[in-house]
Image (cartoon, rainbow, N blue to C red; front, side, top):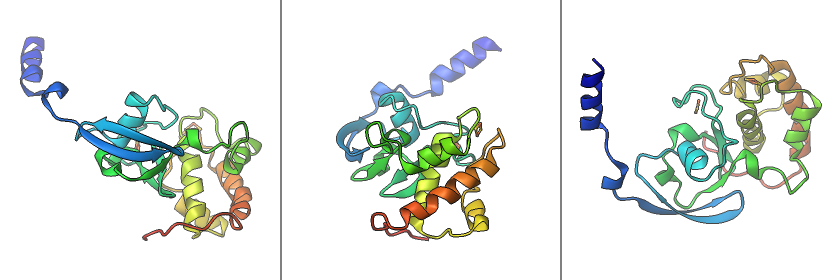
Length: 184
Ligand code: FES
Ligand code: FES
């Protein structure tokens, strides 16, 4: 059985060296980057495995948990469902890019203030998602925040504290920078 599996895997698993990489340019956390990526590499794997930005988490790799949420041109996306090659020309922000030096982003401060995390694994995605939610400008009530944050799962059950954190941080953004266009 094991021998069969070994033969089968070696016959079907492609060797990355046999495939051409593609050059892409993007802005990542404010820094221009030139990168060579394989056509099947997801943005999530690019961030974690190639760029060592491990704040963005992989909870499912199937678009179901939201742990991989990052911001593309201010809009939240699932990095696990985005091929790196699709990010040519994009402006990306990950959890590592939210703070201004030593000063935490207001959404990060609100999460700490309200104990909006326990294990912390869903937290980078929750915070990026919350910032994206603010950019969308669609949430103003508790119920709307709840509904529009429902793509981010938290198995520690910190939902009520996450809600309190987002609710507190929300007004601070309404006078901030212009909102990006969000297709909806
Ligand atoms: S890892 Fe992307 S949605 Fe779960
Ligand atoms: S804080 Fe543990 S999964 Fe959300």
